[in-house]
Image (tube, rainbow, N blue to C red; front, side, top):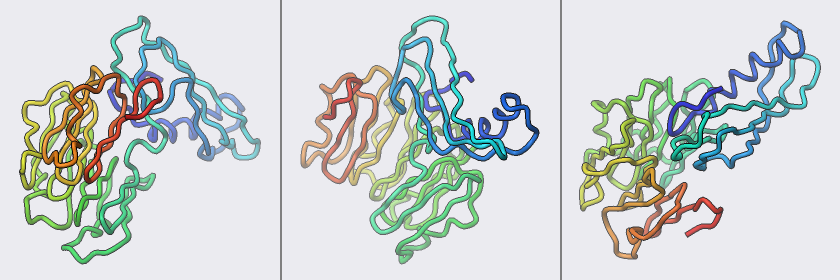
Length: 264
């Protein structure tokens, strides 16, 4: 199993393993059930330059005989600058919480939502399909589809739902009146109200984005972090951060996970 993009969606690989792996190992032609747990020799969601990674899925069933687990290994061949990540089986933001509503992606690519629906339709997601990621903003919902396009529903006073022309997207983030998205080439696009929080057009080599209340933060491939927008509380003071592997933007604060497991 070869990793092939910055954010590999293990949720898809997990289903494939559950359906196919028990058959040749156990020699039975019956449908398998999904595994219940996932482990990896490299922490999920982190960068690695290791040439081999062991992962296992436990709790699968071959239709009658419990399976203890399966281990897989793949190799880059040579150690290179980190260009791959392992995501957990729940693949990033399968669940996302907004101000007053929660949305979630189901295994079949459909979406469910609960909470207030007083804005024009932030929970109107029952007709969506082929969804890989969701992001709940303030009164609206954004979703990334399997074809790398984006859909949105809900409050659109500032144009935060104007995403119908986007393509080649790998990740979406929803804030308070603005939406940002990471493209496959490492660039970032944004739409919505702009008090500098949408000033992302010159960003490059980005591997993760996070939309805060009135600002946007992004993780770059070299482990550094950039931010733009409201800085009332110093939430954009990230220029000296290094060796970061994950970020999250809140209302007035930014947090980051470093490669050594510490948090700033």
